[in-house]
Image (cartoon, rainbow, N blue to C red; front, side, top):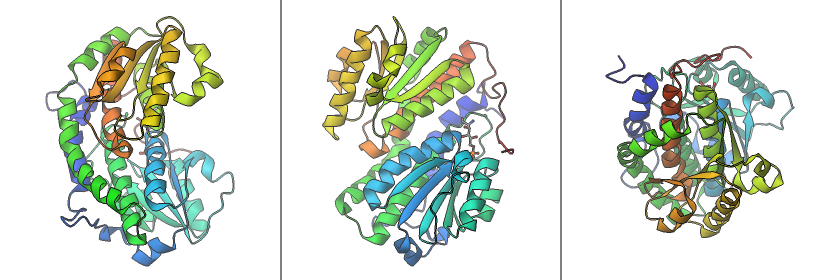
Length: 369
Ligand code: M6R
């Protein structure tokens, strides 16, 4: 059932274009409207929302961190992201006009279930973004948007991440449309770009041979650091999570601007630093800032592995290794930049002789608090 792959994870990585298309299917009309009727929240419910919390664990939490950038930008509704295991223990301010979005692949993560129950107890409305039909989280939520990613067998989440991102984009754009949009033109353009992402991910996946080579080079590294800004920051966290969980290598993700506040002391001769560079076509200030962060770590001996947008030729001079991803609008870029990190982690784990699908000490679904 691995369909010719050595590991389910590799199969699931390759299923991402298809899974992403399934998440989007039927939810976008040709006229650019987002149809989320299945979600069972009325337009009035959505207009009443004055605050959003996104609550999740692990990779699903990293999805939430990306979603915050998109949702706040498009809707202008304040949006907080919180680890489910922390949320209910700190008395968050919740009421009827709070929308709590819980994200879970399995729908059975106990930390997330307990957070959802806490939110409902405080009368907040709960929308689940979930991959597993009929699981506990969608059953207990007021509304659900299924990601339709298909079964994810490997413990490490891959297609769940991309499909959750797509679902969050749909929710953000839908909220923006229902409430009247400040960035109407931008929303229309993003919708068209979202439709194009499955094909772009497919093309990206066909270009992973250099990433596999890089994995062999990095397999003995004692530590690997990941840096990003804006939506590239959660992608850095996700890249580090994958590497820790699969390769058992110390890995940390940082907001690139934080390096100088401490973590840059970790950089030693040859320390690999994976750098997520935003599009040069977007907010160029963001790109310029990370380019100077890359120069800073390189000056201290780091081996810079740069993930950048195709066509960004200028960045090559700062990269010891360069991985290009297809061009997308900044907010959608995590759908591209996360992919080489998944392949890298899986290949490093395989090179080190680990069980890629069942890493030590972990379970697919964490049903204890
Ligand atoms: O099923 P969930 O999305 O609720 O699971 C949350 C985390 O346990 C999960 O994403 C975990 O971090 C993965 N193993 C990461 O690859």
